[in-house]
Length: 155
Image (cartoon, rainbow, N blue to C red; front, side, top):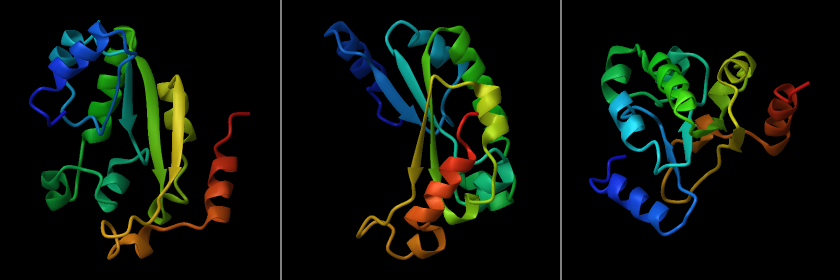
């Protein structure tokens, strides 16, 4: 959403017949934007890695201002934007990255509350040259990731 022409690009893609989708952390979503893009954007993916603002701050998934003050209300904002997007007819995807700090965190209640059309769960991975210095505090093994996924399967 930081690209100055994102709305025009999405509109152009829709005019060309594409199914349109955007993934965002949701911090810049607002009512005006969602209503403005309602007939142009088919799918909205929102990244939420934990169901608590405190954990989002701890893993650096909050705004710099929130991280600096050690508190956030971003999750409540995302829930509100999610509900509005749902009423406007967007397809909604929840994206979650599983990392060491979020391993013991249960996402089940949040997922039930949001009822996403799709839930994509990713294992945090090293990206050479991008997260070399911080990956060891975040990385989880394949086996541990699989256990997390099994715990969160719908019953």
